[in-house]
Length: 60
Image (cartoon, rainbow, N blue to C red; front, side, top):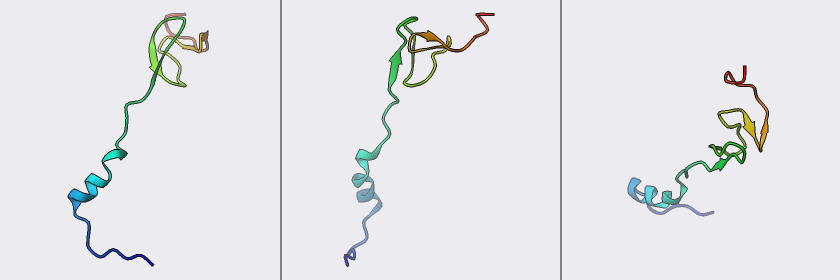
């Protein structure tokens, strides 16, 4: 069984995890309105994949 010989310092631990940071969320452009929104989410005007799926206050 493997047992560590020396304790890894916080600095070295941080260097070890350097590549595990969170990236920025990917965004998509709505084809009908040209708005930018999160992938797999509805755009602010209620469009999803080119179709109107949600009524907004502006529609009423």
